[in-house]
Image (tube, rainbow, N blue to C red; front, side, top):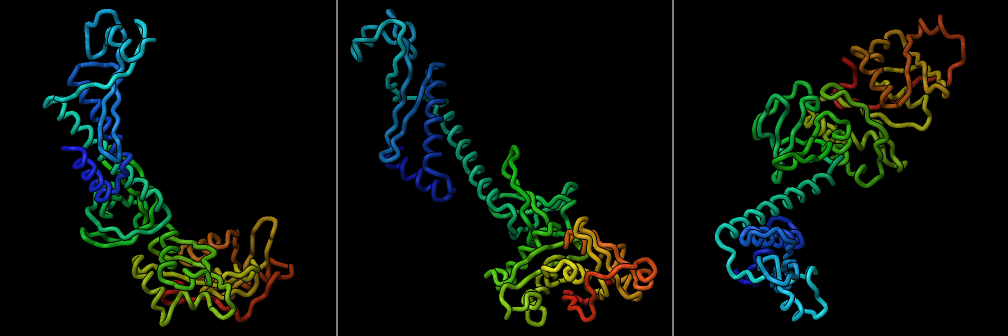
Length: 371
């Protein structure tokens, strides 16, 4: 292969495999050094240099200046050294261009192996860097197989895995299924970069809303908080910065089509969308949707709240196995203690921070009620 052919081949590899020319040049130079040392059986310092414009290659070896040359591959006579520079003396080391007309078959194989290995490493490095930048994003993956340690998927350039603790409970996966997943991190292993992804992370719901709701993409509507128990229920608090835009309505979409797409993507998980409020008492009351709240007592110092609900709303406010109350606490970041009105009347003898009558309780993606 002449210099022009080499440059053309490099450009093709650079384009097809997304590997920088500098990396390819380093690989070729390393391959030539390995081939030279193997062919001439030397361990002296050797370097290769390739001109990226012309493809011209030079190999340079360090040689010791001696009176009598015993190994011409690592030594140079004083007489020859002084022809290069009269100041050289015995014991000095100089660098001279090596003559490499014929490396031999074994040396050529060595060079080829080094180039292939370096290109593979560079390609894997480029893939790793690409996916490392996508941490916190969602990607569409194709299911390959299910094994004991997780669900293996494919992104086109590399593989990913959903560990079983990141799999939605009750969801099944079949080869060829296309799913959206949240990128946790990219990691290296002995074979190739691998991407850890999740179907349970709250960030998946956030990114899905960003994809489905134009008002979120434009910044008119913002997601303030998300609390999720994957496969069962998610609460999303949203706010609009435009008085003419209903944040909850924008997320639900016409006839519920926007949130319906998200629900379908996450295995029919229920989604409560509520309007965030700067008044923490109002916010806590809304976070307990679909239950109706009568009063909220707040303790700013402890970030704790006591909530009073009608007697017939207590089980709805708490939710099955405490889920509704637990999600509300995660959503607001406050401790929430829920009491029925009859119990509260007996236990509390203080004025409420807020009293609610017809509070807008937000919307549920499916039924608007707790099972």
